[in-house]
Structure formats: C-alpha cells, structure tokens
Length: 305
Image (tube, rainbow, N blue to C red; front, side, top):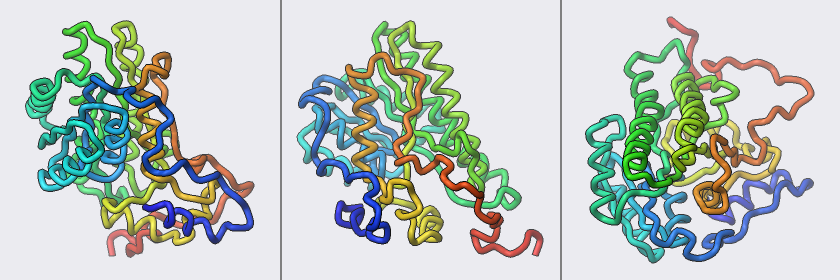
C-alpha cells in the first residue's frame, strides 16, 4: 500500500485525526551502518511483509539471505533488495523440512557467514470454519507456522551455541495468539505456540547471548496478500475507520520495529512480543456487537447442508 492509499483509507474518519502517518519510505530511526557486517536471514522474504522487513535491514547495511519456497518470487525480490545497496542471496527452502533448513544456513554461511539475525516470517494461513477444516488443512498451517519456525530457530540456536556467539531471533506472530482467532483456528493455535516459543527460548538461551522476541503486525495491506485473506479484509470496507488509529499500517513500520528489536539498542529486550497494530487488537466498545457466526461471515451455508 502506498502512502496516498493509506491517506485515502482514513478519509471516512476525517473528523478525528487518528494516529499520525509515519516518516517517508526510506527513512530509518537507527544510524546508517547499524547492520554493517551482520548477516540477516529472513524466511518468507520474497514477498509482502517479509520483503518489507528485509528491505529495512538492507538499508542499514545488512547482508541478506531471503528464503522462500517460490524461486520466481525470490529472484524478483533479490533484485529489488539488491538495488538498496546491499548484498542479497536467495535460497529456496521449505522450512518444514529439517534437512533443507540446515542447508539454507550452509548457503548463508558460505555466502557471508553465520547469520547473526533470524527473522521467522514464513507462515501459512487461510480462513475456514473449524468444523470444515480437514486434517491436511490443519497440518499445512501448523507445520509451516509453528514447526517451521521451531526448526529454523533450533538450527540458528544450535549453530550459535556451538560457536559461542550471540544472536537475535524475531518471530512474526499474530495478536490472536492472545485472543483466539475465529475462522483461523489452525493459525491462531500455531501463533500461540510461536508466542510461547519466544518466551521459552528467551530464558533458555539468554545466558548464551541469544535474544528471542516476537513481532506482531496489524492490518498492513500489501500487493502479495492471498486472495482468501484479502477477501476477508474486504468484508469490512471501512476497515481503516474501524481501527483506533483511523488508518492502516504501512509495511515499513513493521520493518522499523524489526530492525530495532535486533539492534544493539535493544540488547536487554528478550522474551517480549511487540504488537505494531495501532491498538487494533484491544477491546474498544462498551457493549459487545451482535454475534455473527463465522459461517455467516464467510458466506457459507449451515453445516451439513
């Protein structure tokens, strides 16, 4: 989403100011060169929010390794990110495959060295009522979102523990890890597991100098959103006005948060999950709205019919 599109999204709430827009694209709160000499590995870095996070690390001097299952998107993202001035390597990877996960770290090491920062952004998701969810649908989301995050994090931790070096892990989560996610039972359960993993490993690995934090995006529309997710968002056409911020987020705002959490300026922050969503997940009505079932919201007939 462009800045102009974000401004357009606030027009219906023009009587109230909402949260101010962020600085322009290309700005950074951290000093130039903050990540000079640091290797940053981003899963799901070929598209969407993963690419936006990778871009902010690139601006600050990082050597990037972006991983994804889709080679064509990786190639396009690699060229786009390299234009920001850094070195970028792309690696095709299914994060559910422990052997392939190890190979991606080998690719990173051979290209630039052991990654000092790991951003676990890759996940799977689609809306479906729980009663309609097949076992395969459950496994596909939980394996990609939770198991894949664990396998990537475990490999990162094992290599740094062996080398005796510090590092930083950022796991991209979701606010329904706290609240539950009607229509997204598989993803909500997996993201709750990711949040617990952040809190557990921060304690286990803190003595060795390894930070583990979570990062939760709010509504940040982008061109790479799946048709299912975009369709769900379109159910609320005044989605910006329904948020306390009276605007949607911009992907770079998530990138700025990620670069801070992994930076030398956040060394004492670990085991924390930072929500970047303009307070959208907090309750904000005195009286709960009428209940509309998930089936109705998704336009599905009664179960069994």
